[in-house]
Length: 308
Image (cartoon, rainbow, N blue to C red; front, top):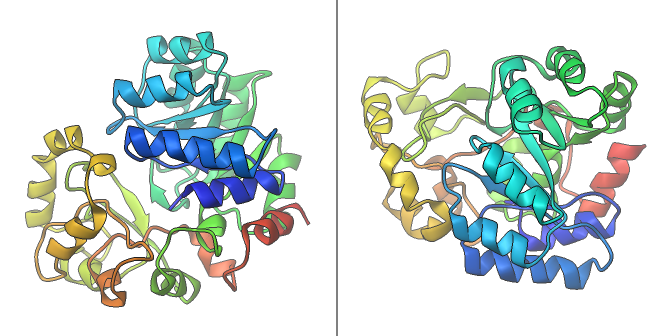
């Protein structure tokens, strides 16, 4: 959902807009869009490592992005390769062990401490405010950004008062006009009364994701949110599909094949160009902060709300 339009809008408003994972050719075009629409602002790219290929890294280096956010993988050589090209590297972490690896072993420039209440792909089980002191102790003088449960300015102030250098607010920006999310998906988030952490949407990538419930989760998840036996078994054997990856696939074609009645669910989320009812067969990523967000607004207004 982190489209070039959203990244550019956040950058123009003074934030660090981050381009989401996409095919290398599309990534090149996305970087150009942000540069054109937000000149003199930093360009950041999210490298989702289960799906990232060497060509993604090559594009980032060739086009001289400013910040690379590494998530769910990586190593010291990758970090050093990006840093040698003048790119700051921030690593998403959800545990003390992950933070120590990123900072002490890989020598990353900083980390995003992601709490369990965050939406989408989860790195740990610890709430954000409990994880922050641990990450800060490991980081020393390197910056720690906090993700998870960030809905408004009071959350930003609390995080920064506790030592965070800034915040990451994925769900707040998913609920903006510039987001790539389907309007019915956005409305489901706005009217949700709970989220669940589940492994259901794990075909090609069997990890936990935080989502808003839909027909798929009601049919195939246990009361605690975990996927039932059949989809769990299918997902556990599907990791090799990540070599293809969502950046090379047509999410619309993938979602057309999915059904709430079948136990096969990929990480694909419903974008603006799919039918409304497809939200029942796809991952509705969202954090607990959605329950405190009341409307879809512009990215600039969202950034203002996080500062006020």
